[in-house]
Image 1 (cartoon, helix red, strand yellow):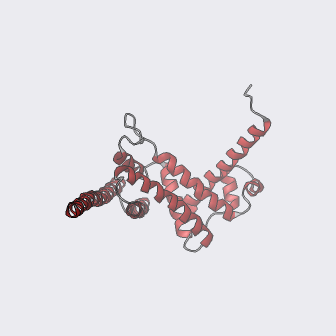
Image 2: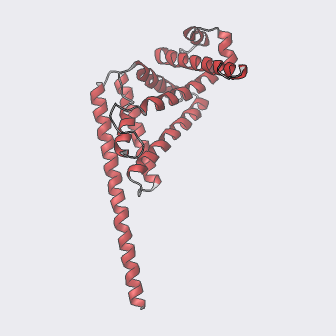
Image 3: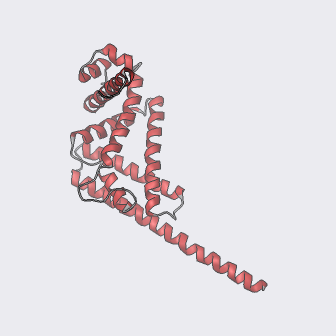
Length: 232
């Protein structure tokens, strides 16, 4: 016996069904674009009836918004992976952890290609859809906040606003390179090299900012010592 109630098992089945629908929606968006998304095609892709799709999601807009969340969550899962033998991203090596998480957005795997293509399609559609634009802005803000924290583990003395600007540049660069890679305008290896160079540039910039912050403290301390000496 599992010790699980009928309610719990039913809840899991419902959650799994919703996940199947969102996975199907991501595949359809990656294949046909947002404008080509039809609820009937999502249902066929998921192997269920159209009525069951509407049971879980009230309309097409609801499917789009939840698919955006699904894509963001799935990207987070595959970007926290690590090769065997490499240290975990637990603060032991924050620079490597940051680089790995961003470079894992460039993988020649169906799941990654599908996810990145669907994200790009949703981003393009947000230009004409204010509601989707708001949802996309929220997802991107979470991404930027996570990168800001990651940069803080590398350069803890750099103020958060400076780290946030660096995170915004890194996400913008990644999205641009991803679009070119998916469009076959850039080979995968070259896209990864350019992303790696962008990370190095941002970290170098933050290192100079950190150095300036450190050197400013002794100067202030020296001024205080002089003032005390004069008044003594």
